[in-house]
Length: 332
Image (cartoon, rainbow, N blue to C red; front, side):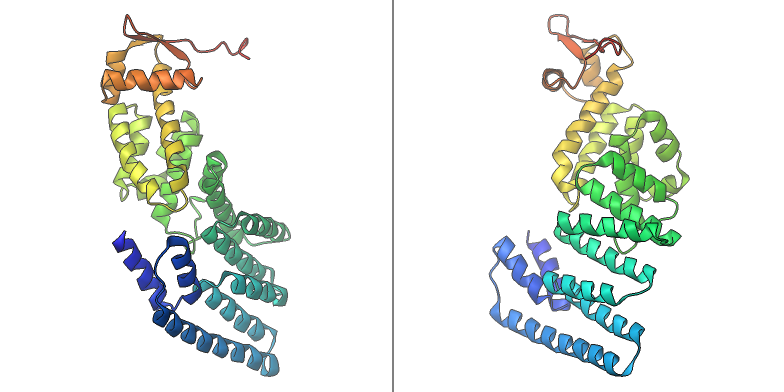
């Protein structure tokens, strides 16, 4: 995609991201422009020299706070240009130099963000644990809430939607993690995780009646349609809105890997929700309800029944779907 490439190259040139440029060219098979790389490396070396001089000056003439700030500036710059190894090393040095618990947490949050950018599970897990330990020692209310958002984002990225939904809903009224995403994006993630993970009564209480979520959904028509079409049992609208949501997910770095799984699970949920209300239904009625052909609904249901995901059977002669929900007492 040329437009995406142009955007990436613009960002790389603006911030002289030479380490990231080399990594992108290697991973995506782009041709490396030697002249551009040399120019950016020169700019990086000059900036790093300035930052090292600032650290040296602080060590000779200033106090511990100023030394820490100078070290943090260097770590943030290395992070900004995509020098992962250098940034990790410098952040750890800065952490060791930091006394205040709140500032220590800020360094750990930056390491988690680095981990999320590279999807480095080891780095993320280690620092989530470290952050929780620091919070338990007496972290403030704001950072406690921000940690929940960080945990939620990671849970969502590894398909633990129920845990992610719980964490997101806990912080929906107190969201301040703008370094991770803006509020509409946070509400989008909250709705996507809640719809797949929560039972209807909980979804009603926390999401469809949640004032903070409803306020933002006015500016997110596709997500609003998706949520309410399923909740209000407008299944043909739900299938149409799910196509829009699928596009949103495919364009999202954290959700794209789970798109197929998510869409399949939501279709099963919608079929199960309709079947739950009836002992039997005609295939024509179901096809009409979902706005699809009888042939499509027949194939879909057959696939999910064979996989043990839907408790019903299809009478092909009578063109009827009969539910056979398992007896909870005797089901094994």
